[in-house]
Length: 152
Image (cartoon, rainbow, N blue to C red; front, side, top):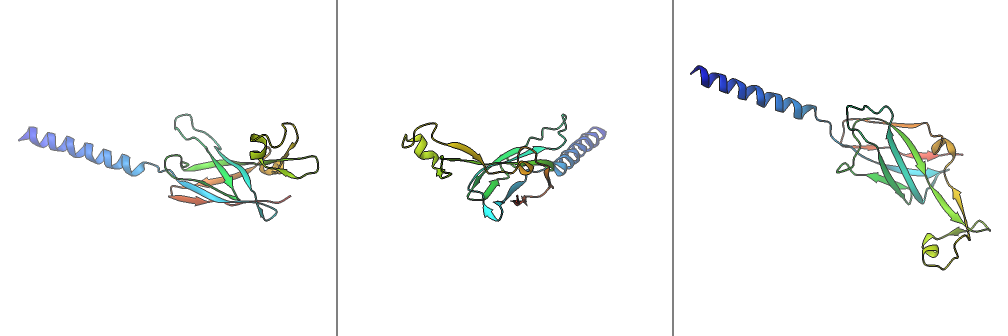
């Protein structure tokens, strides 16, 4: 009888420990939003999220989302962001010809425009890109919306 009680007790403790661990598990969160420059949608680019204070004991990694017609999105699974504070950086550029006209990247790939015919124009002011101080806090929620309105 004592052996059965001991076995049941050990089993109960194991189940409770497992349930507690599952409750504390942090879920990945989807993040999405709009990226505009002076009120206009940014046509293409990337939004990068990197942990502000990475903890070497926890595997929290950042993420990158592609900007398409002013919108970006990282789904919760499989690559969503874990709860925490993230530095945010926008990267967006276009190719322009000597007159300032936008060059379609497909025209370069297809050979319709000779290589070296254009120059890269950065669409992101430094305070949103290379010198960004933008941050976002991701809570233990299913999704977060974070819009970025770049104003020069």
